[in-house]
Image 1 (tube, rainbow, N blue to C red):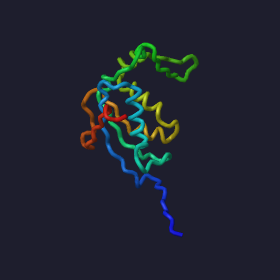
Image 2 (image 1 turned 180 degrees about the vertical axis):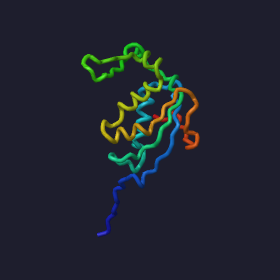
Image 3 (image 1 turned 45 degrees about the horizontal axis):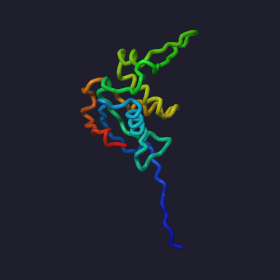
Image 4 (image 1 turned 180 degrees about the horizontal axis):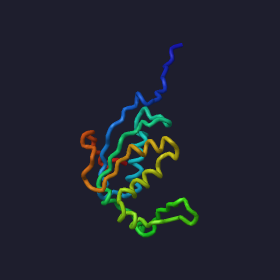
Length: 151
């Protein structure tokens, strides 16, 4: 009997094709942009996506200080951390965290969309966020992604 035989392609560390991607956060909504960044970090758009392998791209996000939050999230959204001591719960609003370091808002949003395991930690290391237009990855020649064209 003559039948078609297809092999399932499973990527590994040696066969994965990692690229550098540049995303401009100027005027973008935080959650919508972060979900696209998480997809690029994870590699879910690739045909050889494998869930347990780091097959995503390295992502550089610029203009983090020009991000938008909808509604009243600037005052209502809170970022909670714990010092590790009894009674050590601390919280900041989005405005306070933005004034302290605008890159941490994007980093927190993207980190929450990645797996909560060793793979997620490895994927998060592939993310570089900068507040201005200058970034240290010009040597990698990242390809620019226009988020307004991606749906």
